[in-house]
Image (cartoon, rainbow, N blue to C red; front, top):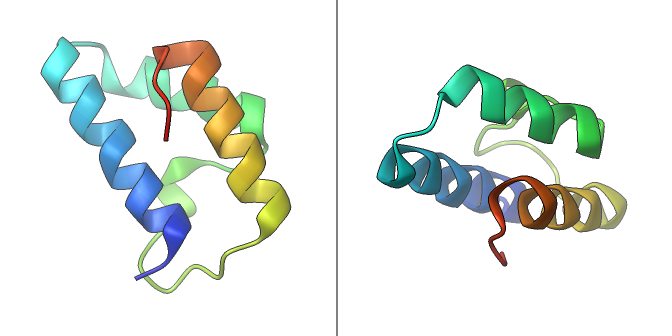
Length: 66
């Protein structure tokens, strides 16, 4: 599994745990990091720039550290 996919799963878990609107939050994160979470799967290759952007977006939107 890719690091990006692991991060996506943690984000989805946090969204559900907090009872947030999944489409809205995923949309905000996708816009901030430049990659829609729907396009991240276990075969997605890790790109250091995208990993860094996704970490930052999760921190800004969900106040979580990945």
